[in-house]
Length: 106
Image (cartoon, rainbow, N blue to C red):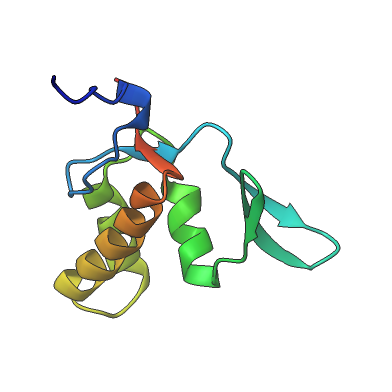
C-alpha cells in the first residue's frame, strides 16, 4: 500500500530567491488599532511580528520574488546582501513551514 499524496494546497513551500511568496488563504496581515501594532492573523492564532518582519510581509504580494524583496531591503538598510538574504529566507521559510506562506500561483 502506498502513502497518500498531499494535495497541492497542503504542500509546504521551499523558499528560495526565485520564490514568489504570498500569505496563505486564511492568513492576514492587519493593523490592530486596540494593540497599536501590526498582527498576523492565522487560524486560531494572532502573531505579533516585529517591524522588519511586517515590512517583509507587506512585500510578499505574490508578484515580487524573494530576490526582489531582498534587493529592496538592501537599498534601505546598510547590511550586506548575504546577511539580509539569509535572514529573509529563514523568516519566510519558518512561515512557509507553518503553512502561513505559500508560493503565488502564476
